[in-house]
Image (cartoon, rainbow, N blue to C red):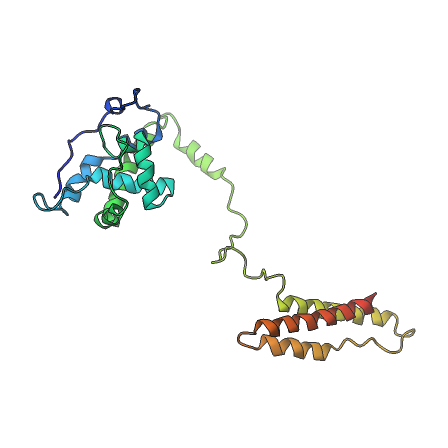
Length: 254
């Protein structure tokens, strides 16, 4: 069963606080409540519910407002209900006329609120909130601004530069784990190239070239990388072996 709320926006000055004082008009929830056209979409929301059967349902403002609070605060369903219970500004935002220390609904009601407020309805609510703000900003634009000046200002904007990298892991795919076996293989090959270059300079003084076992090292690397999923023990053994080759090559370089 659905009972429509009293039409008209509740004034924050009339919101009753049992501990005295009154709400501030500068609060963000008070300002946001004035922007949302609650009454405009309440009839569409009420069509989903019976007028005379079942327990009284929560109002459209309470359903939409609680979902907005949850998204703005980034809290869970239970924490959102607790925040509403403790904050008089949130209770005013939901359309209550006075502060109450008890929760207005259970956290399980969020399931029903999400079902009743479809994406299409939420989209039209967003348009109803945004369009008046856009029209107001256009009306506040000075009329004496020349169109050519606006075009010139548009031309002064810097062009887009750089390259945007997007990845599911939020990192370029060419960044590998520090203990990746392929990094050790590349390091070993780099040391072998250095040995080849250095040996050309001392060939006459050193007739025998230092042994690097590059073919054996290459075969040991490929035997592991070709496996579909190498076990931890196999991977640790392969890393130890490649490290020994790199250590031998560095000693030759020294």
